[in-house]
Amino acid sequence: MKTHRTLRVAALAVTTCLSMAACSSGVTDTATGGDTDAEIIAAPVDDPADLKIAYFSAGSSNSYLQAAIDEANTVADELGADLDVFDGEFNAQTQYDQMQQALTSGKYNAFVVEPNDGNLVCDILTTEAPEKDVLVSVFNLPICGRATSLGEETYQPGTITYVGGQTLDVYQDWVQDVIDSHPDGAKIGLVSGPDLNANTICFFEAAQAFEDAEGFEVVAQQTTDYTTPKAFDAAQTIVQANPDIDIIMSNFSGMTRGVVEAVGGKDVEIYDFGGDEWALSQLESGGLESSVMMLPRQETREAIEAVADYVSGEDVPVFINLAESDSLPGTPFATPDNVDQFSAEY
Image 1 (tube, rainbow, N blue to C red):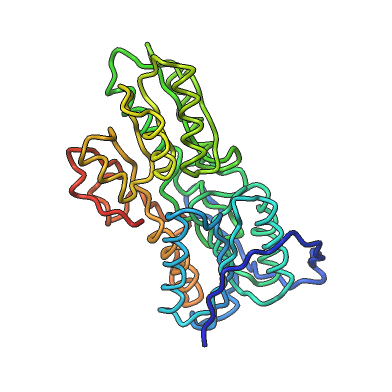
Image 2: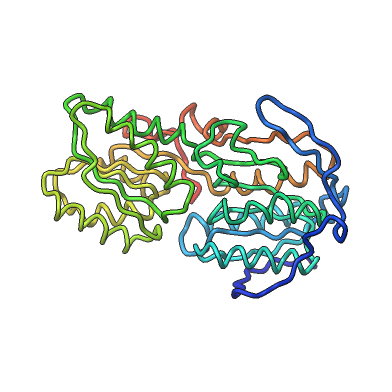
């Protein structure tokens, strides 16, 4: 019977095989595609049903992550593959230790990874894993310092692909929409997830455009753990300290719920990034100005199917751009005017 388990692994001191002399290499050649060097990695199996996948989720504490985990198990069932889910608990060190233990165990031939800290796990995913003939597919957040890269530059050699829709250019378009919609300027607060999270890095970098836009001022920016209560506390602090604030931008729909509660009917416009069922209903009722769609089920499916395609000998794009997905109506930006064209995945 195929197994699906969610694992919470405590930090362990593990010894891994790091030398080329002791570990067989899965990297056989290098090919150049566009501006990105793409590794040609030897597939450890040729049948997707023989895949033994370690699925590293950033956490499991919200509906986005739960939807992704559910989809991961569904896809594994469809492929006939084994899949274990590792709950990273939004802790970079916990997730790193989970990867070390999984790699040392020799149980897995594929890692599908949603990283909490893409820099911390860079070497283990791009050097250590290939040396042990473990294929790596990355989704949601880039690794190895590529958080603010664009297009195929989000892909890191040593892995199969990167699947994502929250790239820097999407955040830049989000910020630009706010600028274009407020010709007289505005005072803005920013609420995001953890500091080391690639989405936070992209969000805050894109928000630097407000500095060059006449009449705009970022009066506060807060990082949280993506939960509604923490976002409520952050937004409440922002509103109390800045009673004349005009806009709050929230980098996840779960946080946006807390922001809406903290604003409490004040004349503050709220922009959401996430596009869950609640956010779309808020767009219909006028509670939000806009929402950027996120696709947890599709990104998970694409990341796992990329591994299956790879071992089957099919070509796999080094970057799968969810912002251009056929499931979207030509844009990831949902507004009160077009909300009926979108469907939430969580």
